[in-house]
Length: 407
Image 1 (spheres, rainbow, N blue to C red):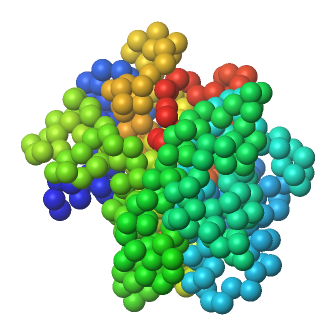
Image 2: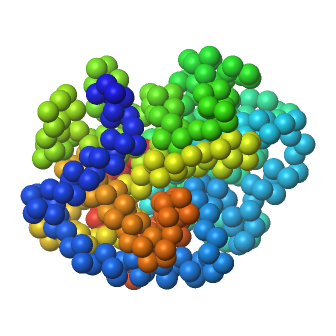
């Protein structure tokens, strides 16, 4: 595996994260101390939260599709049931269009923003609100270039999106601010450009659209089987150029990958820590459309936990991680700062440790209880619960300056 392709892999995310954890357990990290003894209480909390949310024990995957369930009603399932799909691939293409656009709009909303749901009249914030707003935009044809077929996203339409379009769709105004609005619009426009420039991948069976990635994955599947890590690899290879230009190696943009001088290796990737949070969140969200279309996704644990503030906050609020300098809790930190990179990488490694502990307690194998179910059950909800217990607005324990394209 070349240096670049290694950094664009889930394997690299996991290996580098555990290297940082090993440094931390030796007391050699500059920003955090680690107390693994506190993981037991975290496991108890995650199991308790999971059993209350899923009393029948049937925990679905952590993915965007969970956020389309509002007040017990699966909004996307209702929409999809009302469509006469020509075949399974047609529905999968639409679901890829929806998942990709919705996930790219999912970076943190900020504590103040809310979306007023026309069905329930509820005001919904954060990821759930962003999901519902993006679903409503998708269902209304906001991303489609075909007036007769609203349930699609076309490269041509994505390239024309404006800040005003998103302000309208997300009900943004002076009293309802959404952080990173410009970044989200730029990301979707860039998505359109990247897709339009690769008709061989995204337009092989239709006009260029995100859903063309389904056709590509179906083509590279072996006897109808795909490894979850291969989904991520395709997402990073084909959609990688949409991300803002940060670090590059051998002329290839590395996406959600950051400099961290304390991690030293013997090759050109020294000091680089890949995390690929949104790309992995997207990869998790593409598993179910692939399965519905008849493909088998193997080794779901080939993907990693997600390096974001709910899972990361779980370990800080749960005292597994503590700041060496308590004053860092009062400062705002750039997303590329060593402190944030350290926190995010430790989150990935600690989620693996937490998963092993939970499986040990429940007597389940990684196949029976993959990380995707633990995240959903799970660690993300437990992180949010602890955040609200510690802070009235449920904000994360550390403040990160984000442009809306990382978290």
